View 1 (cartoon, rainbow, N blue to C red):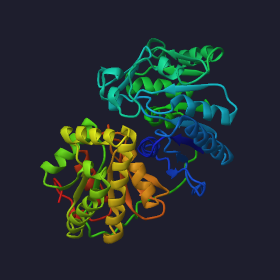
View 2: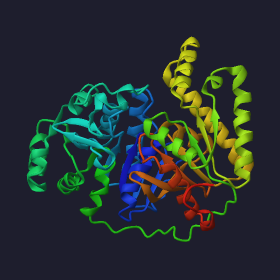
View 3: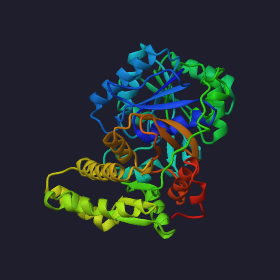
View 4: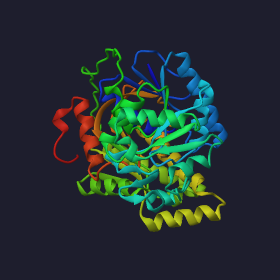
Length: 435
């Protein structure tokens, strides 16, 4: 069995999709003391939800999760991180190596299908240097550098090196020789990739190495070279009966999610906007959440789809930040309060309607919603778009889509709604557009 530790919920599903596309049965389990760890899958993914944790806490979670996977008999380990290195990268890589008593890991951060490329150790996002991309202004982990060796070296005492694209394109045999040479002096080896063919070469070169780290993209290529008898599990008879509309919840402020929510509204989906300023005001918070819940509930019960979202207009976002500063709140605290409010609204809507089809946009929002609902994990089902699958919850018989804020085309949320309707066998509801 393959064991993966992922630092957030959407990333866990992202890498799970890469394996499930190759017919691997894949399960995502939320890190806790009561995890469902039955060995009925080919790939077990533990979601530590540690990207926003203090570094030492993230180390502890990854160390423990890795030990659990080791006891389960996993033979290949993958530390799945953000594809632009946000988070406690060094601490989490170190934790996996320490837990396995190992001293070397290959790192592949490139995700060409989603615009992430690494050339000569320099990372770009849709053609822009990482330090000039939208991630430069991330409220929690602003990415102000593009050199991956330098970024990682600042977070670990282990020595970091890289292998350039010119070596990769000499083929898997020469690439493996170079990696083995670097292994004698370094503990972390970041390997360039510009396109999917580069990832195929890398996968062939390293498929038998015990520890891999980085983005999910390499996982799409690894199964081509790993000889494994697959677990036989089928979801072909899946039936989810739900007369409610599909609920879409968005807490992400990324440009990608902004365009996706705008497209959904343009196509006719009703949007209920949560005023983030009122969420920070204890006197106004309860009435604002009640308003959103009541309005959304009426629409859902009528069988129509509804978008519940935090107000993403730039002027409102700035006013919310300003109010937060006046209340001595940092941006992470503000973000978590808004995610928590959306999660509470989602819980109330599910409890009062019984809806079983849910789409969540934003990594932190997805994790917060899942914790609030008590979702302990999910099986990874079909791909909707690159890196974005549907899932079936382990303990609720609910269909979910958990979307990374920075992934997806403008039409993604519309596609996700229709995809869940097809999966739930309500094919009569599906049309070009949304309800």
